[in-house]
Length: 426
Image 1 (tube, rainbow, N blue to C red):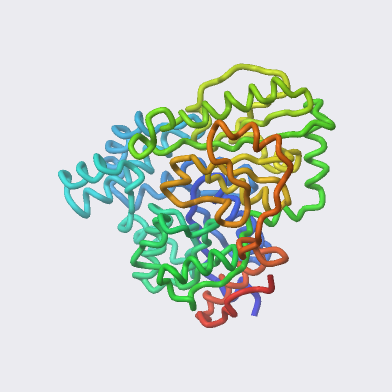
Image 2: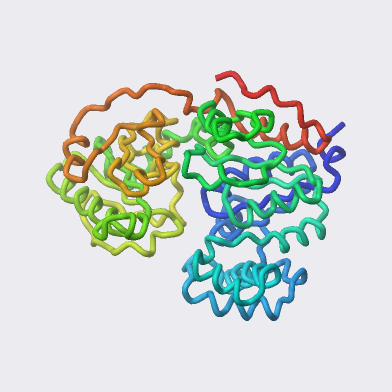
């Protein structure tokens, strides 16, 4: 039986953000190549990225007929000023914010909705009612999400409640503070990037029978033989042939508390960038790429132009060429650290980052990086030779992940929830 016959009603994908769209896109394209209809609900920044990656995404704005649109938009326009982003369409933002807030109002009433928003903001959204209506409207054979909270988790819970087969593609790891480990409802199948990630799920009490180690489709591109040439082209474009290149991938820190006031928000990254720039200034044989998280890059102050320093717009510049060009990659908790390790790059992890400390998301402890214990130690560590790290099962199995995830979607579409062998050969 071919895939289109097996999944006549199509597959609904729900995901947000640049990195998460990258997980979904190869799977969508592979299914569509086999004749399977796919809907991609691409949220916020994910919409533009989905189009950039050749998909035909949908947004909340395409499903306003499922709610009281006038009421939802009134809420959305009220919330938009404090939630706007330069790379997200204003109308889509208002639809997203308004529908999610309306979901609270319908479930708990106006007063409780206001209290929920005051306590957690948009990060607390869980639009179960809306996702239920969406699934009932489209009637997909399978629902697939990434492992983020909010819309993605709501889609899984709504699918489970309606007995629609569903699958979650885990991010990279499932560390103790990851909200994913604390849900009460899980998909029929969870695809994990590595043996370590699967073990973390099991240790959190998630049924081993739900979990299959497939690798992560977002990182299949690292196996593209043209990658090194892209890195070389990046070096040549900037006149950096023969230079030692550091790629700094930073993101906002936790607020204060728990972060110290000088490190909260943009604080740590500003200090790290300042120190890296000084390090580069004193060493003519090195160069620096500054790349902040795509949802946050506009929040960091411009520290000016400088010789051998390139500040990347991460919503427009592809990561691949920069990653291949780099010799060393510096991160807090960015998954770019994972990708860099898969390419055999030297990865340095800022162990003093409040986010690393409070989330226990430490690439050093995950067997992928060398630790930088303090800001003062950064230059000395950069000047040291690379150190080998111990493999503790944090790397994916050999081969492409996309075909494995596609097969699993088709398995659950036909009701085969026992097909998983647990892992592919490492």
